[in-house]
Image 1 (cartoon, rainbow, N blue to C red):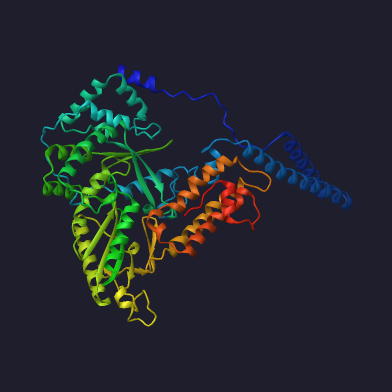
Image 2: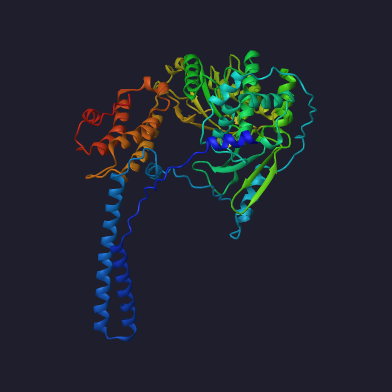
Length: 582
C-alpha cells in the first residue's frame, strides 16, 4: 500500500495556475443600454393603458429607437469580441478547434424513450438500454468449463519493460479511476514487486475479479437515430491495472497464435502489419485478376451486433478444436466469467452481469474476435474469396455467365450465413449490398461495349434479396462497378465542402486566426480526410478527376490567402505553402 501511495504522489500532475481564455462579449455599456431599453419598454407599456395617443406614440418611438440602437451595438460588440478572441488565440487544438469542428462532444446523453412516454427520467432510459444490451443469460449460453491450474513460462522483466514503456497517460480510467501514470511510477519505484505480483497472477491462471468489472458508456453512432438502442455503441472502461495484465497475457497469446498459424491471412483487422489500404488493395487486385474472363460480384456483409453477440460456449468449443493450451483457456475463463458492467452518473448507478460478447474497450477482445470469426475465412477457395476487417466481411464470387454468377453467389452467401449461424451470429440483411462487374471478354458482344450486365442478378440471403447497387462503401472507400473512382471523388468533394465551411467563422476578409494554426487544422481535418486511402486510388485517376481534387483544395486556398477567385490554383499553392494533393 505504501508503494502504491508513493507512486500516486510521484505521478500526481499539478495543473498550472492559468486562467482559461474564454470567449465573452458582455460589458458595462451593453448592460446600461439593455437597462435603458427595459425602462423605455415599461414606460411605453404603462402609457398605452392610461395616456393619450400622442404620448403613447412618443414613448413608443423612443423605445423602438433605443431597441434598434441596442441591437446594433450588441451585434457589433459580438463580432468585435469574436475577432479579438480569434486573432489572439494561439492554442493548436484547444477550445476554438473543438468549437468550429464540432469536436466538443455531446456529453453522454441517452435519447431512447421506452414506450414513448414523455415522463421517462434518466433512470428509466438507462434501465431500458441496459436491459437491451445485457438481457440476461439465454438458453445455450451456459459456460460449462472447469479450470485446473496449468504451468506457463514466467514473465521476465523485459516483458514488463515492453508493456509499461508503451503505456500512455491521459487515457480514461475504469471504476478505480487510476491512470496509467501511477502504475508506471509504481513500476519504476519497485520493478521486482510488480514482476512478482504479475507472475503470481499468471501462476494461478487467474484474472482477478476486481479488475474485470467495467464502467460502461453508450456512444451514439454518427448519423443514427438516438431513439433506437441499436444506434449506440457500448464502450467499457476497464481498470488500468487489469489492462496491463491483459497486455502481458496478449504477449503470450499472440506468440502462440503466430507459432501455430491460427489467424487466417485474410483477416486484416486488429492485425499487426495490415491496414485498410492493404485490405482494399487486395480486393481490387482480386477483381482485376478475375474480371478478364468472369463476371464478378463484390458483396459487403454486415454482421448484426457482432461484438455484442459472441457466444462464450462456442468460443470454448473452438479452443478445443484448435488445441488451445490450458493456461490460456483458464485465464480467458476467469476473464469472462462473472463479469459485471456498471453504469454510473451523478444520481444513478446500476449494473448487469455479462453472459455473451467481447467488450469494446478491452485489450484482448479484438484478438478473441479474430479467433472467433476465423472459421468463416476458412471458406476461401479458388471460387470464393472472403476477406474480413474485424466484423466487416467482403465476398467476391465469379461466374462465366450471369446465371452462373447468380447461382454461385447465392450458394456462397448460404455457406457464409450457415457458418455464421454455427457461431450464433446473424447477418443484417438490410445492410448487405453488392456490386456486379461484367467480364472484359463479354463486353465485345455488347452493342455499346457496356461494363454492366443487361440484367442485374438477384442475390438472396435466407430468401431475402439484398440490394445490388452501382457502388458501395468498404472501409470508408467507395468502389463503383466501373472501377473509375468517380463516386469516391464526388463524395470527397461533398465532405470537403462541409469541412471547409467550418473555417468561415475564423477566416474573414480583414482578419483571421493565426495562419500557422489554420495550416495545422487544415492538415488535421481536410487533408487527412481527402488523402485517406490515396495509396489505393491515387494512381488510377484521370486528368478530370485530378482537376476535381485540385478544385476541392482551391476552395480552402481562396479562403486562406483571401485571394481573387481568378487567381490560378498553382499560384495559390505557392503563396500558401500548401502543396497539391496529387
